[in-house]
Length: 254
Image (cartoon, rainbow, N blue to C red; front, side):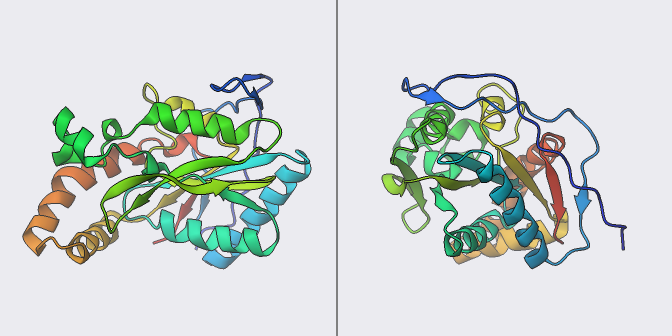
């Protein structure tokens, strides 16, 4: 059992500017310096969520009538979508939720992936419309909290769907995805638009088991599922793991 870790400080950059659509934008957040992250690995997930909601409420108090973007990132299979759903439900119950902007909604369509020759590694960083993601985050962050239609990803269709959800009113906006902390061209700008970013860390054997089961559930046989995990998911997981130092907290969940 590790001793409790101190809570990291959320820092803000003294910058201002305009969103890509011309709206007045809130200051971009400067990513934390590379450091050893605080590992929160001895608390129950319920306690971790409760602490996160308290921090979100504090951030919203400092931004009356505005929005705060909360990010959840980690490797494929780390539980981001599950945690996002639980967090959104709890924020909604408290009247603190404005909506969500899932990164997976910005997948290129299968037709575009075929055209680019990237369908065989769908889910890699260059199979997303990162510029579109940035544009929507800027609109969500703009002063005035205007409604914003955002795309979602339909796993039953294996396709993104435009304007599948709405962000409206002031409050917290939850965004989750693999590459929120990635420090590479295009993706590096995502981190500066997120006020509070949590990295979910799961041991690799557990990740592999979850991912193989996920691919089998969506129709692949075990050999094909294991091949996809080995050749696509795990390389992405290692890339994502290297970005953990750019997050505010690391939650070790398994």
